[in-house]
Length: 254
Image (cartoon, rainbow, N blue to C red; front, side):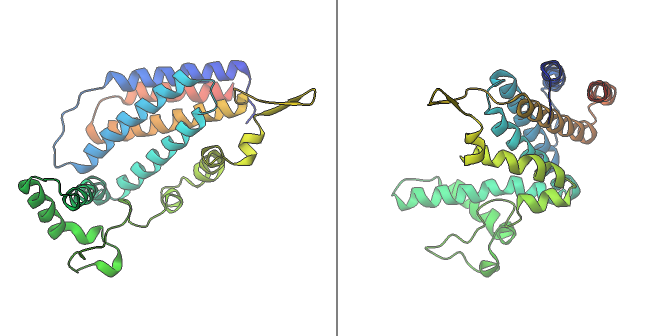
């Protein structure tokens, strides 16, 4: 995207204002049984951290990496809002991680508290099939195998999630291109290389277009996650969020 210095500065100001508004709400009353509410607050806190990091790093090109992971957070949270039972899987996967850690500790001869092992076993007996690879479902855990999926999404790809929540454009036009920078692709690194009098230098900043797109992504992701939290937890931020959105849209239409 084309972006002037004025647009970049304006985007930064809008991101700063949004972050300030989100950080003002830093304590919440939460029913511990509300898995979606717990997940949404965790994701909001992480998105706040990401936005803060982007604003500190600007104009460093690595803000692309941070805005990329903000997309991941947004689409996964939107996916869980479509089916709140998914939030239980996100939260419950902590027990699968604990099972792996405790098994490794035991194999090394280290002590693991028996009451913690009992809690892990109870969760797996009751809910383990939600996380097991198909061929292990309804079967005892093999002695020397890990029967569980590698992550809480249990085989569902981020691309599939993006399509289900209507985030196809966000995934295809921004998340995927950012992947080249994430994975050391020649295209993204090549853009940083400059030649002068037969020598080669490596640039230290991204183009204004890349910086603007990263800020725009960050604003969208934090805004939507805050909006989801506002609705779910009834935070009373409707007016403030509407003002921020209106100002942001007006900036883009100018």
